[in-house]
Length: 104
Image (cartoon, rainbow, N blue to C red; front, side, top):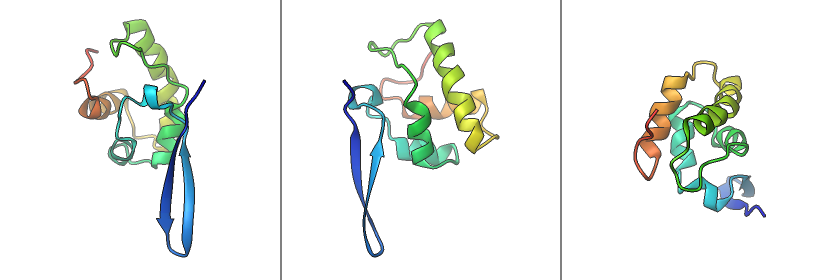
């Protein structure tokens, strides 16, 4: 069962409802707004791309899982910003990973 995160955004002339499709347990308290800003993409795009990533529950993914997740995430992000490289994505994600940098 997926729990969706919803945010109410106040905009000129009214309210807007934005949903983030990353389940709370899988978000790992990642600041998706900051990650997206560092990757020079919208938060909405980052959330969409991350929705198909399968984080390890123990926050210590195997090398195979890391590669599998990167194969999903990186090409999706590059559609929005072709300048995103594997190294750039690793650096940004490590910067905001609550448990500290990942061993690559």
